[in-house]
Length: 385
Image 1 (cartoon, one colour):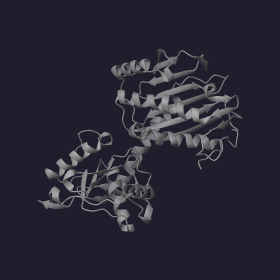
Image 2 (spheres, one colour):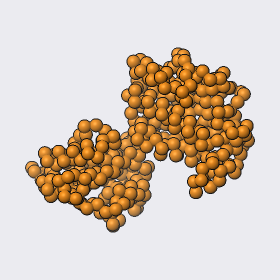
Image 3 (cartoon, one colour):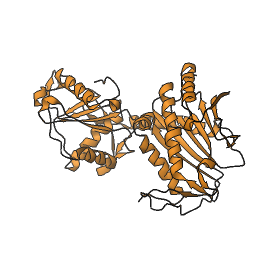
Image 4 (cartoon, helix red, strand yellow):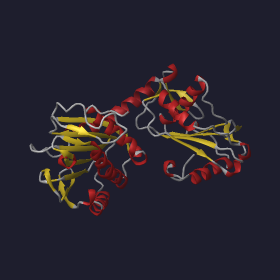
């Protein structure tokens, strides 16, 4: 089983063409492909089976469940039956139901689930349902819901229970990958914060860093940023020991500049911004302006940097505010329970870490942004309705 490109960027027509060719050539089931004649989510057993199948791919090398494809066996190996026998009627809201089942069942959450309905022309009004999950950057995932309490991985043709050594190895891999980011947050050269002014610092670190300097890729990204500077405010690149600094021309309190972008040779980066840009009055932080900055400056350039540098996989993000004691917040949006924060900050700084991946950042940036803004707003006593 292979896709011509990442299925998350494939159009519906491309996925339909891929599935049709897969069935017509009778591609066998494997450790990355599973055919299912029907799907049901009515009983507890059905829901556990669904969660087992999806999490088993996430806990192994990733793969596809293709519902609506009856199978037969050739030499003991499952293969699809003729395309004329394929297809199911998909009830309304089935994708949402599946997503909710997996949200309830899997722990931690399956981070990169893709659910697509495929309308093949030859199926006479019926459809196929595709569930795809790549190898998870946050495995192992346990089926915790429905009192199952087990871990599964994909065997040759089915989900099998993981043994103790496999579970231990997956947890160890997750821990080791996080340790690099934790060390980077502690020791990275992000420049000291000035004593005068308030500042936002946002750091993103790949859990699997570049093992060597990618000089040509760095130059390509530097050229990109020069041509597309944050908020159309140009600047200059300056080298430092661990990478490159892009210093914007506009004046501000962060060592004389309004903002500074630091690209590290390990693939991480840091954005330092003078917080005065987001203060409506001296003591009131505009959270919607922070959200716009993160989306249009920070996360946008992170996406570009990781794509150019060829970085894939899990990411750790650290959000920091400095010199903010007694600062309050405002978010003039109707979906929140208050537009003014209820609690001015008692501490002089605010810091938290969020986990994501290059794929989530690319395909579901708004989800990443929502988690960050929710945590920021809650620090000021502002909650979603």
